Amino acid sequence: MLHDGTYIRNLVQSITQISAELRLLEKHRLVMRTANAELMTRHEHRHVVATLAGLIATEIDGLGHSIPENLLGALTAAGCTISKPKTALKAATRAAHEQAEQLRHRIADAIEKSTIGDP
Image (cartoon, rainbow, N blue to C red; front, top):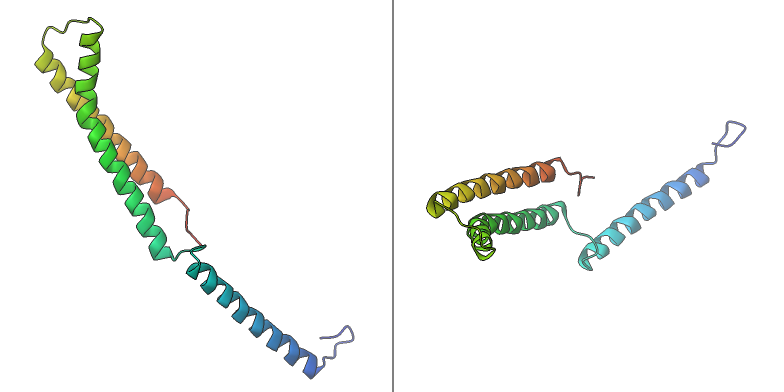
């Protein structure tokens, strides 16, 4: 619409056509960026995040198993004596597993609350 309240039909049609062409160009640009691995679909993104979370959880589980023995080994190597090594190992293992589980839950909560990949 012009300032005086009138409009020129050809001008409106031209703008509408240009707008449609720009939308097509933008769609093509997004398709090309996805094809060139510059962008990924929401499904691909969620798969990547889930894969990373799985790797992290596996590493945490591994640490839960190795930390108690490593800790007791380090204490022994440092000259500390442990009166009940089996009991100490069980307690350290239980504590490490609890900490690993808490860490897994915190990571899962952080991923769930994350806005990464949201439109």
